Length: 258
Length: 362
Ligand SMILES: Nc1ncnc2c1ncn2[C@@H]1O[C@H](COP(=O)(O)OP(=O)(O)OP(=O)(O)O)[C@@H](O)[C@H]1O
Ligand SMILES: [Mg+2]
Image (cartoon, rainbow over all chains, first blue to last red; front, top):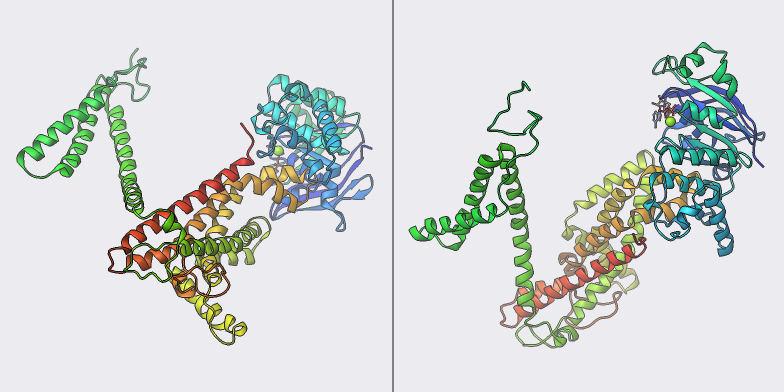
């Protein structure tokens, strides 16, 4: 049930500031797409534009068309919560709900969307935690607070929370930037597994990570500060990292720029 | 090593390779304190300038100076000023505590004189200020009912208002509401009482009451609501703003609707702070006298109904009893004051426990 994402001229504004300009890209179902680029070039903004999270900020708005299996999520009659239920998101910094236990954190999306049955919830917790590679570490302390886990565990808890609602697309904004190498590896393994079920888009500053986990890579850049970010090159990961067509991309991945 | 080590001021900055500094022995502050007291006693009492109070003040000054000098000489200037600052902060703490403790002490000692079953169980019906006995039962009922109704009105309204300002309000309307809430904060309680008197008691209730003004406990609750509302709104607003946006976004990203995010994620996170704010408002309302006097009128007899007839309240009772020249009245006033403090304290503790219960065991 993974979905195809098509961006047609997606543009994002923070009040009057244009942060990304006219992004066009097609993301195939059941693939992992990495977004790379220098800081401030609009990777997070583009990611948040996919599940209409961008517009949560006051003054922020989108233009263009973003199709999920052909349906434009920017249309006026689209239900935002339905979009976000279909497109899950993991944030750069782990944000478990502080008043909830580990158990409640994982099923928060289900319970707050009306699922009540205890057995369904129990099953969902185990499945999601196993899916996030966290089950063994926390299975004995599910009633303990989610905020009491280590940073890496919290991040995997947030991943479990996101996959528990069975989204069809999973967006991850630098999910490993605060993690140790072992947790990072676990999350990368997880991404490779989740790829069988979801369409995954991941923002990362780690080239090796992009090369390791992704099928396709998009390189974003800005000409100079104040200009909007653009998609410079978008191609198979192997091509981007071995033989990019654009000079800018080559400079960036060889470390000569950005 | 070429850097010059200043021997008189060791290790202030990274001035050398020396990391250890001389420290005063742990008994030094005690010794300085003892010396300061002896010296002060000798100076003040011996020369007959003053009594124990002046001795205490002089001893405190001598202690600060002595400890600062001793620390400065032995440990260096930074450590010396650290000792002075520490001492000053502790003294400020003690100074701030002194009035609180003395109020509590006087209240408890004088209040216990009449605080018994008879006081808590009887009213002042047919008992004049010049009689012994009499109690505050009617006033306790009044306070509980008036503060309770006011809380029922203001807490939902105030929290809803704060949610609107923080989560939904954009632009003019939200700013206008915030401005008027600020203005309301500054309303003196007597003005709130006059407002309810002229609006509710003299205009609204006569319509249902054959043209007679309806003094009642409910009118007092309305006046208290006017006073409580801004406190509840502002404190809730501050608490909601402290909830990180990342939590809201985390919930939105799960497809949780906004209103549910607010009810199930934002409010519980801000819960304990909101409870504290509400309890501050309740405590303030329970202690108000003027509005109750104006619109509930006072009543020496028990009146359970907040909607008809005059009612008293504990603060009003204290005001009445403290004002008459009777040998029995002051004891009643103190006992009522103690009762009021105990009630507010109990409510506060209960509310805090209730807010804590939801918190997970760490
Ligand atoms: N809340 C905001 N309000 C105004 N401008 C913003 C906001 N968030 C981001 N921007 C601006 O939008 C542009 C793109 O930001 P974005 O966060 O998408 O960059 P990024 O590529 O994710 O960078 P990083 O790699 O550092 O996370 C930047 O110029 C940034 O300053
Ligand atoms: Mg970013």
